[in-house]
Amino acid sequence: MGIKLILLTTLQVFLNVGGIAVLKLGLEKCSLTTMWHYINLMFNWQAVLGVFLIGFGFLVTIIILHQAKMSIYQPLSSGITFIVNIGVATWILGEKSDWKTLLGIFIIMFGIFILSYNTNPVPKNI
Image (cartoon, rainbow, N blue to C red; front, side, top):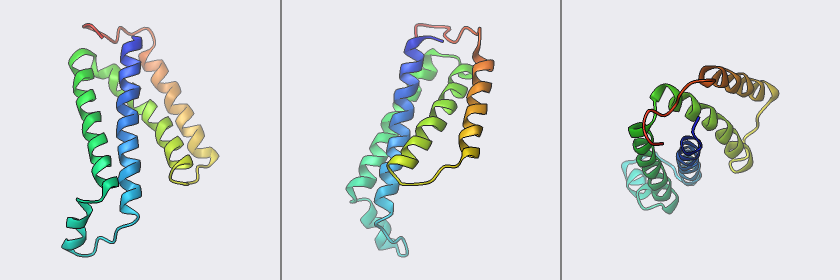
């Protein structure tokens, strides 16, 4: 795998997971029972920042997909997402993870390694 692909994918994952985490923090302060609450949510700084980060992550995804094989990028992105998501959920959002979750992530990462081993991930200039 090209180092540029790994770095861009890691950036994309941090933007998406970070955006979702910030959005979730903003949603925890909201009651979404009326239409007025949804309108107020559009002015919540955490919701706006979260959507911005997710949108920027989407732009990075477009750059990656333009240059790399999807069959390599998507499993790589999924594996990095699992790791970053568990870290953010545990350390920022205070969620709990058990040994089964960590074992599952390890098995998935091992599968991604097997799928991507000895594969040319970059047909272009990434």
